Amino acid sequence: MATIKDIAKKAHVSAATVSRILNQDESLSVTDQTRNRVLKIAEELNYTKKKPVKNKFTMGIFQWYSLFQELEDPYYQSIRIGIEHYCTKKQIEVIRAFRSDSNYAEKLKKIDGLICIGKFNDAEIALFSSITPYTIFVDMKTKKIHCNTIVLDFQEAVIDIMDYLTSLGHRHIAYLGGQESLSDDTFYLEERRESFIQYCLRHNLCYEPYIKEGEFSAESGYQMTTELIKDGTLPTAIFAASDPIAIGTMRALYEHGYRIPEDVSVVGFDDISIASFSNPPLTTVHTPTEFMGEYAAHYITLLNQDTEMKYHTPIRLTLPCSLVIRDSCGKPRKEL
Image (tube, rainbow, N blue to C red):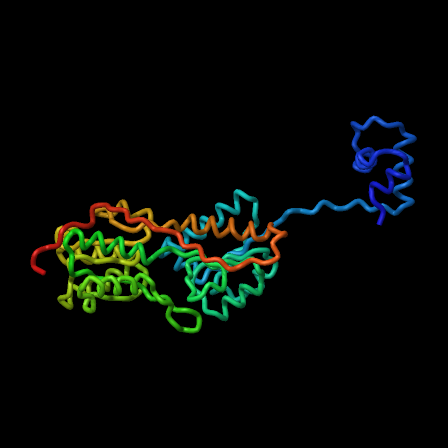
C-alpha cells in the first residue's frame, strides 16, 4: 500500500506538502502544476487515504437489582451516579442493564468495559469477565482476589460504631441488617453482621437476643424494631446496617413512645441525604459510594487505554468509611 512518503519521493516534494494537498489545504501556496502532479501520482500508486480512528469507548453497567430496588435504597443509585458522572465528563457512552432484563446479554455485546454493581456468584463472575477483560465488580468482596473489585472497609466501620456506642456506656446493642441472596439462592456473607458479632465476643457483650435480619429498607427496619419491642428485648442502642433501616427504626420507636436518644440510641450506615434531616439528625457512617462508581469507571478506562501492559493482575481496592456523629446517640437509659 502506497504511503505519503512514497508519493513525496516520486513528486520531489516534502511529505508535509503531499499531506496538505491530499487534505485540500487551501492555505498551501503551491502551483497548480505541483498540485496536479501530486494528485496524479497518488492515483497511479492507488493511494487510499486512511480514515481517522475514532477513540470511542462504551461502558456497560450491569446492576444486580431492579430499578424499583434502586429507588428504595439510594446506596446503589449513588454508585451508578458516580459512574455516569465520570463517563459524561469523559464523553464515554453508557449502556445500562438490569438482571431483570430478559435480554441483558444482548445489551452488553458491544461494550468495551463493564462495571457490575452488586453481588454475584462464581458462574456470573466468569460470564461477565468473558464478555470483556476490562471488568470490575463494585461492592462485592470475594474470598480470594481473582477479579477486579472495589469494596468498603466494613470491618473498621463497625469497630468505629461499636467503640463509639460503648464509650457512651452502652452494653446492650442490637444489630438490624438485611440479607442479600445470589442468583443461585445462596446468601452473601454480610460482613457488618460478622464484624458486629466478633466485636461483641471480644468485649463480652450479649448479642444473641439483639440480632434481626430482614431487608435493607425502612419498612423492614420498622418491622424488626417492632419485634424487639414486642419481644421485650429492646436494647439501649440499635446499630442499623443501612440508613433506610434506621429511618424505619426511628419511626417504630416514636410510635411506641420511646425517645431518641434519651431512651434508645440509633446509628445508621451509608449517610444518605435524608440522614441529616431526620428527627433527630442521624448518627451514621459515611460511605464514599459515588467515588466508588467514579473510580471504577476511571480504572476500567485506564485498563482499556494501557496497551503496553500485557498482563493485568486482579486488584481489590478497599475504601475507608467515616463515622458522622449527629444527635441520635446518647448515654444509655438506666433500667437495663
